[in-house]
Amino acid sequence: MTATIDPKEIAVEYNLRAEVGREFLTITHLDGWGEIKKFTKKVLTFEGRKFTWCSWNSDTNSCTFYRMLDGSGPKVAKIS
Image 1: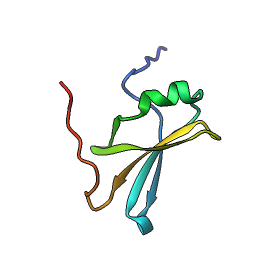
Image 2: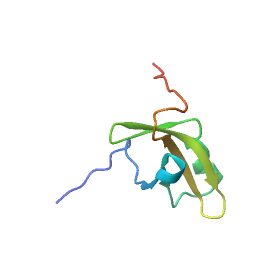
Image 3: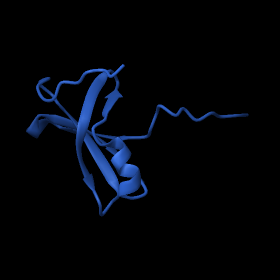
């Protein structure tokens, strides 16, 4: 049996916070700011929805992306 790594996919944790009108994706187990900074100013697409960079946590070496449930928030454009 063989497996391949898809360089355009990453494991995320999903969290819905309806009380604040947002949903979040968190990327964990990163190796400090050097690895985390690669994700700043990026957009993640998850199940067809776009999430934008929100913050990072130096204690847990994780970064978070968010999306407003009502569709408001940052708009994104594709760089070609």
